[in-house]
Figure 1 (cartoon, rainbow, N blue to C red):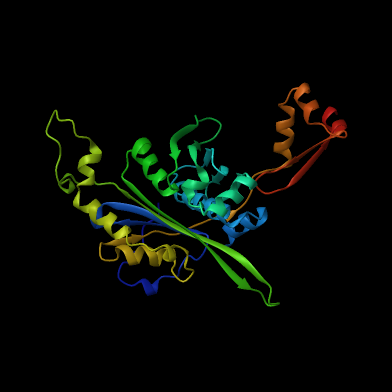
Figure 2: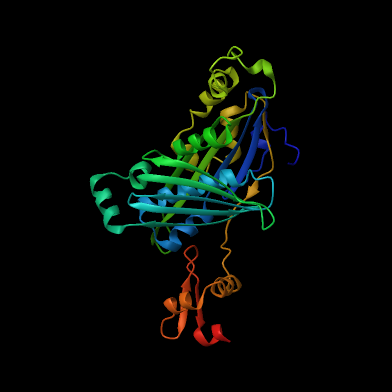
Length: 330
């Protein structure tokens, strides 16, 4: 990582990264690292492309922000896929992040079940998702093994699920905040349209000094790492400051990712690092479609042939691909 900019004193000297950017930071006095993100046009394009209903758009927006916060922390060239599979009205969320900052995403939902949930006012993330799992898959390339971690979804918010994932899989004390907002604007012709924004922040406690630990369990005791980390004064303070984030601060275009971090930790020796850009970009291609079809058996191909051709639509970007039976046989 590049050397941080010492900007803890004068935030006015910083040019904000703007929308669709992640800003990493370190809070030196609290042994805490973090990331802050603002999503604008890239997220809006994903949502508008699929014309998702507002409750689905909000849920997918949270998932995109969570994936971006996690994906931009990867220390290698690769791919992070975060996916939920549940029994609620929104049965599937998938966000695919590829380094250094390319994302694509889509959702699957039951229209009738969603309409019923909206009518009953049951549109909280946990209510829309229901029970199931959230899986995080890290792919470092063809010569490396894939890593997958899973955590149960049982009516909790994505923030709570992320906390549980880090506690179980990474054993790193972590806190996450996610926010999504819908702005209605009129264009030059007076036509109004929704614009979706989202933001989020993540902090993790990585103490380097033993004196930070307030109380350890006695040798041979039954306490665990999580117990004494929770009692660490630095982590308690970091969490307390982080808990002051308001929902509107996460989506306000006038509060940059840098300014949000500054508001939280400017008195605790904050260091900001160069931002990382995020873009809406699908990885589908005709070559990949051909590779997929060639991997299928003749019987499987016959099942998907219709009127002498095979039509495939990318679930992420909506691009249509058509291959004739003659082309395939040739």
